[in-house]
Length: 228
Image 1: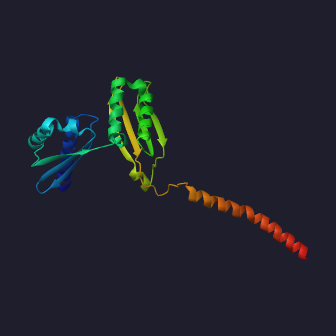
Image 2: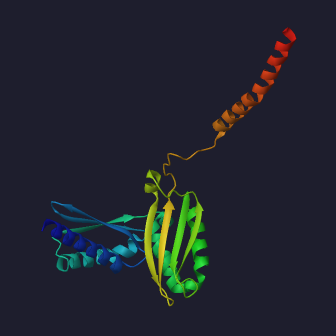
Image 3: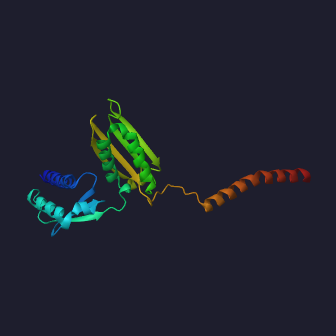
């Protein structure tokens, strides 16, 4: 019974998140986090367009609060807006933007859209990025296209710092799946090797020592043979 209640609770929570995302518009919302406090529910909405989400004098926030109370039976929902200053470094916003562009411009221009978005992500300061499109692109058979640039970890603990998101585009040919991975600037990667001036000096000194060893051995042999 407890497991059933937990599953139903998570379903209702997912329903709240999906409703907020759909109501505020695709491509505007990155994430919706719900925190439960003694005085009510604290709902944090991450967006790159806080003005459009809030509306004039907070009209949209008031509408959402009313619907969450009546439809989803929340006691005292309090919606907070968290602004995303760099949308090109947010994987969910980028994935939604690619999906919107595919729906507007058509699936035939998927390569132009993917490469252009990839360049913008790297230009924004990302260490690496990967865009994967899956669907009928451009033929009638479903295919998987991968576009990548920069440094990106796939496995292990360093892969946890990679921002991953998914979205869908409904085109004339069918549904296209969009997956975006972004390694943000300043991410700590333990196995990354940084070649700086100090490392170059160490390499030069090591090479010099390696080159001097054979010469010293030859001189030692000559000295030994002369002494005999």
